[in-house]
Image (cartoon, rainbow, N blue to C red; front, side, top):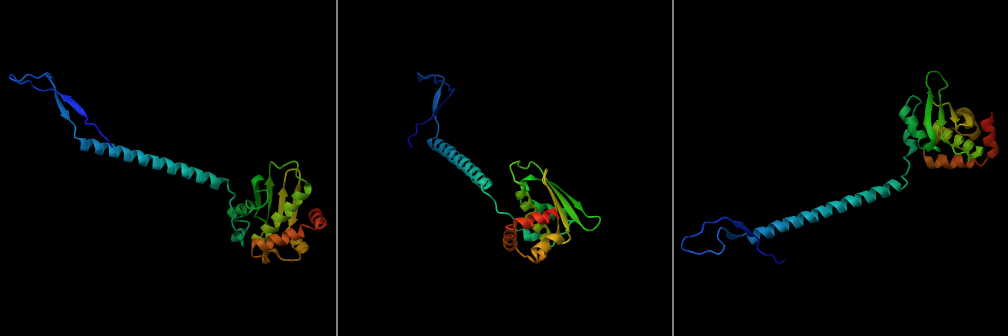
Length: 207
C-alpha cells in the first residue's frame, strides 16, 4: 500500500539572521509507521464488523428455516400414568392431539367420581363434515384414556357438534384395555384400523 506522509503546521519563531519564506510555521511530518498502524487497525475493525453482520444475518436465516420447519411432536407416552388432577399434563396431552390449534379450554371434574373432562374447541371450519368430528373425538379420547389413569369420560365440544365418550364403552368396543398400550405407533395403528368401522363409530357416539 502506498502512503503519503501527513503534515501538520505549528507556530515557530523566525531567526533574525536567517530569512524564512514560510515564516510563522514549521512543517512537521507525522510518522508514517504510526499512520500505517492506525489504518491497519481501522481495516481490522471494518473486517470484524463485516464478520459480525454476516454472522447475524446467517443466524436470522437459520432461525427462519427452523421456525418454518414442522417440528416433531413430543412423545405422548411420557405422560402415561398421569391423573386428572395434573392440569399441566392434561393440557400438554390435548395440545398434541387432533385440532390442537382450535383447542380453547378444558374443564376438569376432580371433586366427585367418575372423574372426567370437557374439552372446548373454537373457530372450527364450517366445511368440516360431522364424520371427521366423530373420528377426532374417538381418536383423542383413546389417547386421553390410555395416558390418564383416572379419566373415565370426555366431552368434546366442537361448537355445533358435541360428543361424550366413556372409557368403559370405548374399551368395550375396542375389546382391549387402553392402558395396555405402551407407545404411540402401536396405539395409532390400532385406532386407525378401528375407525374404518364407520357404523361402529356412529353407534359408539349415539349410545
